[in-house]
Every structure is written in C-alpha cells, then in structure tokens.
Image (tube, rainbow, N blue to C red; front, top):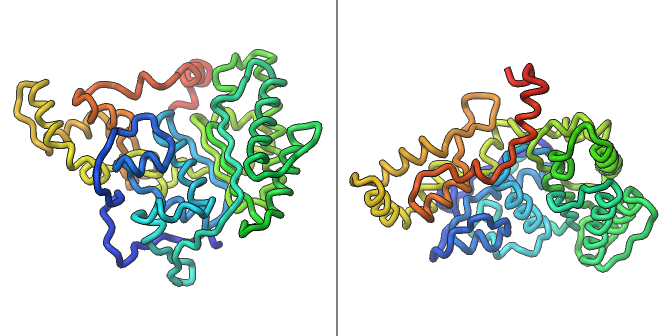
Length: 355
C-alpha cells in the first residue's frame, strides 16, 4: 500500500475519540490486553492509526516514556493483524472508518490475516549475553509453537530467518507476509553499566538480531518497534538504519498514538465526573464542577506534546489519569513508575545534547 494513505471518517456516527459502550467496569490500570481494555469501557480508539500502519506496510519506530500505552498499542496491532478479532473492534474506527489512498479512492480496512511475531524485550534476562540470546530463542520457539511449526538452528539469527521463511508459507488463509512487533527494544541494556563488558556483549546480541531483522524486511507487511530511548540506536550498527529511517516518534500526524486527549477524557469518563467532583469537593473543601476538574487535570497531566511543531495535540499521561479517577487525588502517579537513571547519566555525560 502507498505511504500516502490517509484515514477518513465514515458516514456512520462514531463517538469522538472513543468506542460506544454499554457499561463501565474497573479502571484498566496497567492493563495491556486490548480485549480487556475495550470491555472495561475506557478505551481511547487508536485503531485509525493501526489501520494506517498496516495498510501502508512500512517499518515504524516509536519512542515514548514508560507507562504511556506502548504495549497496549502493540497488542492492538497484533489483535487486528491476526484478522480474527473483527467483532471485538466493531465499534472502532478500524471497522467503521474509511481510508483514502493517494488517488482519492475510498477503501475500508481489509482485515487480512497475517502471521504475527510479537517479541516483548522487557522481561529478557540480561545478566549475560548467552542468557539474553537464550531468552530470545525461547521467544521465537514460543511463536513457532503457536503456529504449530518447528524451527532449528545453532544461532539466534538462523532460527529467526527460518521462522520468517516458515511463516510466510503458511496456508489456511494467512498472507505471505509477517507482522513483526518488538516492544521495549532497549530494555535489555538501558540499565546496564555502559562501560561493562556485559553491556558490550548484550549490545552485540541486539545488533546482530536487528541486522537480521533488516535483512528480512521484505518479508514483512509491517515492522513496528517501540522503546523508551533513542540512545541505544547508536550502538546497534547498520541494523538500526531501518529504525532511524522509520522513526515516527515526533511525527505530528501520530503524536497522539498513545495517551489520552481531552476529548477522550470527556467522552470516556463522563459517567465518572459526578463522583469525582464530590470526591474533589471533599478533598479541597471547595465545590468542584466538571470544568474545574478538567482544568486541574490539564494543569497536572497534560504537559506532553510529541511533535516537532506546535500544532500537535497535548496528551494526558494515561497512568496518571486512571489513578486520578480511582482516588480523586492530584498526585504524581507516573513519576514513580519510571527509572530515569539513564536519562540523568546522559545529561551528565552529554549535556550538549539537551540544549
């Protein structure tokens, strides 16, 4: 598909920034399973962007802070790419919206069925390069087991290539292209001592792996990679070129790819505001209205803009918003979930990068 493909709103009415819901349940704090979040009633619809990525078919690299919704977005791509979850997304843009290609033709999302390789790097063992490589091999073997195929080979690179080559030949309605999703690519190394031999050895494992990913790119419908920092890219060698070239982290048209917008909060939490206003009145001793609460939320949690221009929307940190609607207290919930040691070290060692 052409890269100029743009999503268009269908004639069917959709709630702005949300899906329709019949009831509310628990707040999905820390939940990264798209089915669970949709059923909770608090899902901010990001499927327009998922559809665009899958239809365009190119490598995309996204950097966002921890607990901003990257893993949920990756899970959403996987669920849609698998092609069997149309009913789950029946009230979302992916089912009701339209896309316009470069010729002005209107198309609907085609719900093709792709083999999906989803790799979460956040839980990999990084105490040695051998353990890191062993964990990666186990992830690939788990994927192979899921599709009832077997892969062999002495190295991580060989097994990955053989998994790709096997999955593109699957029958039973699968497309001959892979959707490759890598979440938290930098997690195995960001907290290692960068002067240690272990760091260098683990970086070699990642560098070799991404070189193999690059060599298999033509067999992929989509490669989507997330991380917390870009610092690690500089040590990944030529294999990281596909990530540099596909970096969408500050693209204005995807600046709200994760996080809540103001219209999301007004739509998704509209049934929560009466209780939260009462709670805020109890806490502050001052009568609170919905507009007062929204104003305070913007002050505390709306300071994030992921674009190079002033046109991109500010987004609310979702972790903080969900915790606020649970407790009613305006506190720094998100800051306690992140490890900022690497950022501090980079500022100490390379302050000129932070002008």
